[in-house]
Structures are given as structure tokens and as C-alpha cells.
Image 1 (cartoon, rainbow, N blue to C red):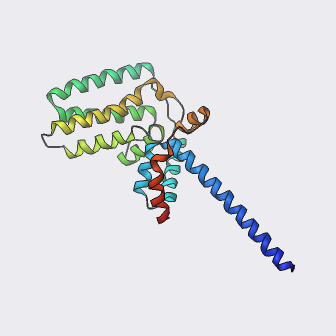
Image 2 (cartoon, rainbow, N blue to C red; image 1 turned 90 degrees about the vertical axis):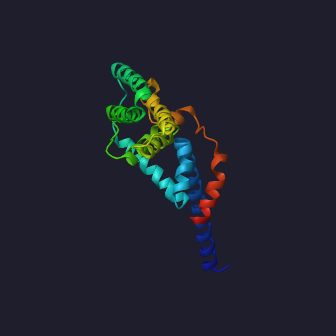
Length: 210
């Protein structure tokens, strides 16, 4: 067999091996991000033009989070926030709009005390999604409802906003918030702990666009 044929075969083998390695690395990356972000992974897939773009966005969030010095609240600060939240809840009876605004401010204050930047809402949500992917959508929905009900008499929307805000508030001030980055916890537990079936159809559609 001519030498050039052997060269072509060797090149072909190298390309196949490289492709298989790339696929394995891509699957590992997907599994890591899916385990880290849970339902937020689904949301990123829905918002992005492709799976690659969605995963790049999530990876960027995690990289930014690692640059932040997130710290736990002291017991004194935690007790103070819990008491303040109770005051806000009582305020809701007489002035729902002011209570929701106070709840939003209280969450921002807790985030700042924990070390999260708070200048921009979208960035706040993105930063929070790394450590609290299960409740960040509550935060977004609470913010949306608060904005949509501003200046109106929609007490029910404001009540829903308070409930959504409370989901994030409780995670920010509870002792478990002191735990390390979620991906590190999952790694120590030996698995992602996320059901991949929930995203399979979305991934298929996005792969067609990739």
C-alpha cells in the first residue's frame, strides 16, 4: 500500500480521536453546568440562540462569581434581617406597595452585606443564580411583579411579589447560605443531582440551530 494512503489513514484516525475527545469534553461541560445551575440551565437554553451560547453565558457567570468575595452573615446581622423582614410583612397590611419596595431594598442590603454587587438588577440576578439557582427565578418574577404593579391597586400581584422575594431572602439569611459554591458542594457529594430528562427536548432544538 502506498505511503500516502497510510498517511491519510493516520490523519483520519487522529481526526476521529480528536472528535471523540471533544465530544467527551463537551458532555462533561454540559453535565457540570447542568448540575451547577439546575433550572437556570433550562432558562439559559431558552434565552440563547444555541446551546454553545447558553453554556458560555453560564460559565461566564461562574467565573465572575469566583472573583467575588462572598461571605456569610454574622448571627447578629442574620437576626436583624429576620426582624426587619417581619416589620416589612406587617407593613404590607397597610401599604402593600411600600412593603414590596422595602422588601426589595432589604434583599439588596443583604446581598451587599454578603458581598454581591448590587448596582444592576440583571447582573444581581446573574450573580445570585450561581449560588441560588433554585430561587433566582423567584427574584426575577418578584421584581417583574413589583414593577408592573407600581402605581396600581393590584394587591394580589404585590402579594405574589412578596412571596417571590421571600424565597430568595430566606436563602440569603439562613445558615445554609454559608456553604461553599454550589458546584463545589455537588462535587463533594459525588454527582450533579439534576434530572437531565427535563432539558433533552430543549437541547435537541437548540442543537439544530447551533
